[in-house]
Length: 228
Length: 237
Image (cartoon, one colour):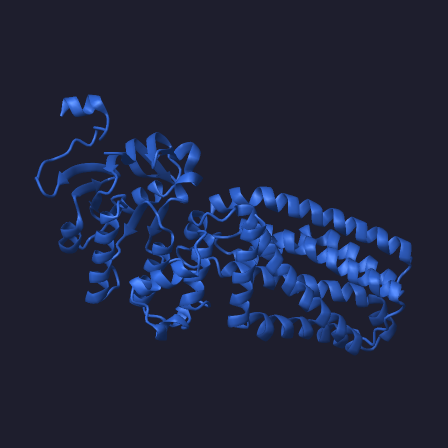
């Protein structure tokens, strides 16, 4: 299963590297959203500072939708799903490979958006402990987002109008990640009423979400692939 | 002769449409079968069913000794399907594509190089993205992918489509070499002149059922209801 996942993720990252869609479109999209939020709340610097964690994660969620669409649209060329089913690759391995591809791209995007927020929103990072909280929250949240994204991406593979259906289905599902990651970041940045201890509790909730979706994906991806 | 494909009254419904409405067919090991029939007759459905990609609603369907109803995944690992869609990643190069599918089938770099050489994918095309290739060149890449699978059963849907004369000759050569090495080949084609020259038997299909089965060399009509290694059927013949 893991060997198959590595074959799939290597292929997906190679496609991204060759097509440059991630670099040419995804990164500018995320930065544009951050800039738009900055324009909208420019006159209220206190509100902007308070809202930074939420704005960051809304931006990441929007970018997630594009990332998942991109990583599954490559599988929609004629004959590809048939070849995937014939390939002998373990469906669980394909799921993990897809999720890993989304995870890697999401992490890179998160690093850029955090730096973008630091510049645009004048965000100040605190102690080493709070940075560790942010890093852990981002890592665990990204696992959950990538797993949910890969699962819903497969669900919509071969469905007409999937481009508009994906955000409609995926965004409500990942709302707990938005809440958990925002709260953890609030604790780390000291922008809300959330304490550091509570921040780590939110990381625990994010971990539960991640485990649930990775497990669901491992078991459900095969039947979903059969139905495409 | 060992039966590689054994269908008895196989029914396959796509949506509400019975694409196969009780197809009966036996194919022995190493045989080359030409499937012919009008558009919508059920040729592509029959090939995809034999690949284990479509469900069997009723009847018996066994491929390579596995029941398609319960064991389709075991069949998939041992067959190769060249369908209408070539199944290639547009953003990847020719080498990337062949390498990915070869690795997925537990192949190695040697398999990739050998397959690309056999289909005449010259060095100048190796690093070209599939999106930049012509339809015929894509077909050649798909043939290279097929070769890397080392399958026991080839299911070829219009394999000559989109190919120039050299490409068509290449397909014929590959099919003959495969049959010689014991691979079973089922070809669905409208290019009857070429495909008849390759085939041991011509199976006609219409309305989702097999309507005729002719041995090319002897001209003898087969009995679609008989099993190749079924003693009762053999006695009856």
